[in-house]
Image (cartoon, rainbow, N blue to C red; front, side):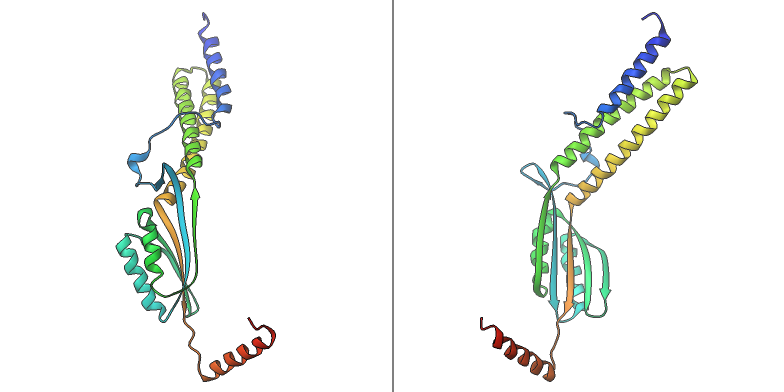
Length: 221
């Protein structure tokens, strides 16, 4: 093409047209693994594991100390803790995925388990999709930077800089989502509720006995 300015504008138009396709996943993959912890893979899948337990215990402070001991062995930590009065404590724990099942079992021995729930979520397709989108966006951003270095007119520079800024915003968004998912895969979440065991006094036993007797008047089994 004899006209360099026309060639530049044609190139810019082509790149801008490609921007609409950057949200569609391609068979590209960016390797970010070197800077991240080992991921929980089951047959090549990336799985988020979480659990919740309610433990009835004699002493909440002693049970909390026992929870910390279990966490220390699993190389986990307490993410948050708060008390509801003096009879209930809620703990949010984070443990490496490799120690998830064993930690849940160990925690279950610290008191009477009144409720337990274990959940898994396969996020493989989401992470692969985010990485494909990132690959597309990063490729387009780099091409726009090359074009920016060649631009001479102010209007062209402003258009390209605006697109680079938009692309960077999208890249940051996808990187953030992907990072959160990978952290959730690497570190499992365990919610533990410690409830102080209720000890009935003499009147309490009498009241419970009356309740039981009355209930049998309506329901035998």
